[in-house]
Image (spheres, rainbow, N blue to C red):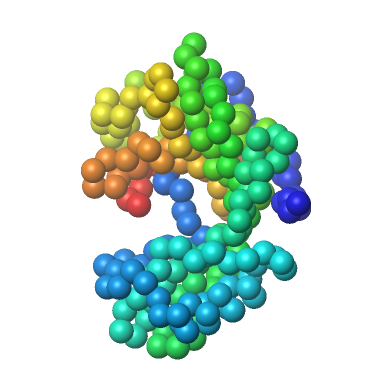
Length: 235
């Protein structure tokens, strides 16, 4: 069984601390140009798999997904089989690969985890799928997911806007009015990622039509950052 090798120090998470709501980032960005051919030639795929094995842990078989091919280049995501733990967490590895005319290059594989659970927010039990990386424990993932949902449920942001920009409250209201937290059997998908001494939480299902999304940051203890904050990003 493969497991992440590190866990971080406790986060600065008071009762109503900030959270970060953004879109989950893949191991690498997908190509911007439209996919011309969503398949790979057999010989090309064999070269891709050989390159992918170089960035995956030994004995794990690469699985090719989302291939895109153009006359002089190509792109594909690489995943592995998913393994289930007793805790309910499912984990696997993911990478992305691209090539020029011939040679495939793959980014370092990223350890990915996921769990389907429920969180009581505002007195309502909500079904949540939490995706998190190998640097984040299940306990921290659940706590930050709860904080993110609790904060997002507020009609006005209880946090400052990142980068010190003033007058952004109306953008928060646009999101909260058009994307209320789901209830009943509808499941939300949250993604957590540790980046630059900060845990970030993305409410991936809450996206405006033009792909504008909210991000809220949780700095770790003694990470050298000020209080948590939120911002708006285009995915």
